[in-house]
Image (tube, rainbow, N blue to C red):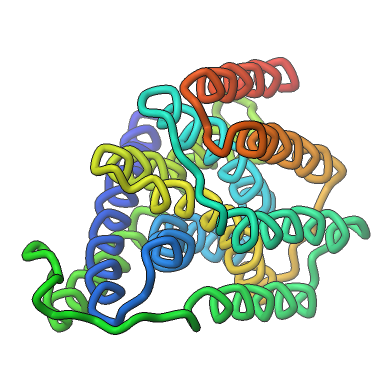
Length: 308
């Protein structure tokens, strides 16, 4: 039990370090290619912070722990809104620009509904996984096709050169791979020891761990006044989790989906609806709205405990 606990803790640290490195390296590459800030948040940064879910999901599917692949994605999406964005908004307040409603919100809504439709028959097949991956490609292309010229004199000094950024990305991916293996291995061991289902572990412990990159990235973005980057990161990560993470995991091995998964997809839709209502009401996620999201997150956790 002690070894399993240390594996989870060390794995989460590796996931965090790997995600931080990937985000810094990928953002440097993006700045040197002229990708706009909101697009960076919804694609490059979102992909970087979703790498823990991606590696964890693929490894769990490969290891035959399909419940963790699905529950980790849905649980992470709930935590991204309730925890990452909720706490960030409660501390700083988050402004939302008009393009968020046209660029990020529709694909997020489609991804949640699509997940429910594909999982309704109790299985996400390899064909379903391919369709999800193609959807992710279309979403990414739509955002990255809008680029601007780069003025090398205006690039921040802390931006890495392309060779250094690529090296950081490679090291980050290795850290993510090792961290994912430890989190899944230790989490399953702890689940069996305490008699907790793998679904509950995946939707809470593993989901929280793999959502920490989104949390710290959102906080850092808001501290520097980059609200678009913060919101784009959370919403883009949720889209990436469904389209890319589940798509890649399903290609690795078809994913059986229980009725519990469909229930949690409704919970995910509920959190998204609350967030959308806050954003539409005053074009921002105020501190008060952030507090409400955090309270809903706590209610979700208590509900999970009672469900177990």
